[in-house]
Length: 230
Image 1 (tube, one colour):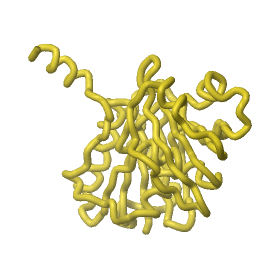
Image 2 (image 1 turned 90 degrees about the vertical axis):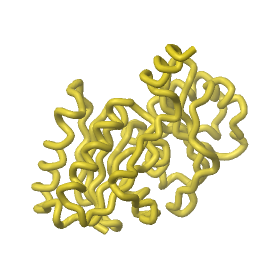
Image 3 (image 1 turned 30 degrees about the horizontal axis):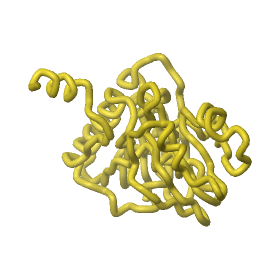
């Protein structure tokens, strides 16, 4: 299944095309520009480099979150717009944390993706990687950083990944050789990992209108509304 993936959930903008067996192309840009300025030109450039058009694709995938509120909305809106113009396409949104775990799928053991949410609070997940298959051990969550890592079972090999992993290793597991930190190239979001996650479970495809972000915590607008309603 020829799949285009778009990730705008974090500090990088990333697009990729894969056919289920091969990564055909990927572009990752760490930029100060907003994702809305660069993501669709990146998609167009990538497809042209592969001599592909939207009509050649089978599916388009984006990051569902957690992550940047604005970034997630941009990615989901881009996918919905693409599908409106190419209604034959399947589409899906994949957990950002799951995709980070798929980015480390060569590791054999537990993978713990962790992303900064706000001071002392993180987005975290627990996944198991065996033979290239990645499965969730628990639901993704937004959680107190110290409590989560105090309760984490590190009796076996654990790979930390995500934007907070070097600091987590130093703060909580500096003397524990079971806890590893992923290579720097795998710590930030990559669209190719979204392709891999979708290829492992293409049944997650949904109609474009059903695509939704998974923030894992209330948005600023929701918090403001709740405050006004008190």
